[in-house]
Amino acid sequence: MQTKTILDSNAMEFLEKYLNNTSATGHEYKGQKLWMEYLEPYVDTFITDIYGTAVGVINPEAEFKVVIEGHADEISWYVNYITEDGFIHVIRNGGSDHMIAPSKRVNIHTKNGVIPGVFGWPAIHIRNRAAKEEAPKIETNFIDVGCQNKQEVTDLGIHPGCVITYPDEFTILNGDKLVCRAIDNRIGGFMIAQVARLLQQNNKKLPFGLYIVNAVQEEVGLRGAEMIAQTLRPDVAIITDVCHDTNTPMVEKHIEGDNKIGKGPVIGYAPAIQNNLRELIEQTAQENNIDFQRNAMSRVTGTDTDAFAYSNGGVASALISLPLRYMHTTVEMVHKDDVQRTIELIYHTLLKIENNHNFSYFK
Image (tube, rainbow, N blue to C red; front, side, top):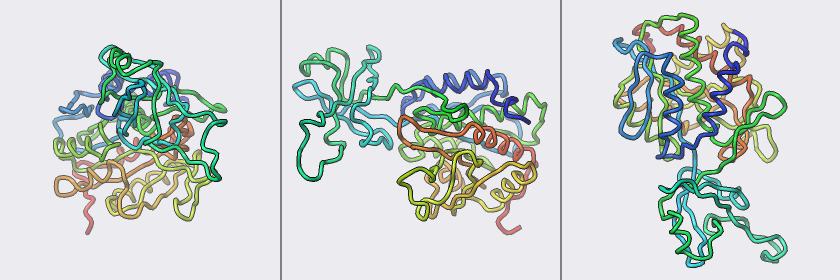
């Protein structure tokens, strides 16, 4: 299976469209529609829930259920307060980085449509000239939409609670580095959709029900995964998310570990990760000559793995991560080869899972 087989022009066209769409936490509707439209030819049916998690199902009648999952939402801001002079102060919706906000362009989503704006910042010439300059803080971040006063802002349809996103779009650097905002973790939804596509194209019949889950609200506490885990009650869950490339400047490997883009998917180690399932994934990688890395995450993974693992009395769960540079910025970066390898690893792992597969801790 070569890169061109999976990441062909049609797949890359979908990836670009999917990454460029706006799917802020709690507002994932447009992205979920795109994802379901792409996935529809490769699944038997869909399940959706009241908050927007979407699930493509293969073999819905099977009793044994396997989940492959990514999350669909991106970090964003909320309008919090509008000053009398027409400047907009914000609060986070997810883990938005206040340090990168100054001078960034933004889109404010209203019932009247998208209103463009910018995060303002005082010029270098006139900022505090103290010996140690203050760094940006969420309290000092503000948005300018070009209005003279609060009334002009509200006349545009802007009010507290409006969601704010960045408009930065997909690009490719040096032929194989994929760059965009929200690669964390719409790249996960893309990869699991490609797994479904491969199963159909290669005419693979699974002996279990496969639930391809694109969950909402991961960035605010794994909430979408919590809900859908209770609905589906799966037997096995393989989660895909992103982890840090620790080989860029200003990162301490002795604290963050040693993972690098271009060296393959990262298999997680944490209490929530079921050891027998993890070992099956590693064995699959070795048998199929798929390069991989390892990452120890201490108490929790911080991903939807935790939500699935501890649901329904315990679900055998594992995490396959994609190494990523510059997480929670507008220039998140992954290696195209790692995307390919992660798709291959999930695909081949599914082919090794048998109906009623026993991942018992004590076997």
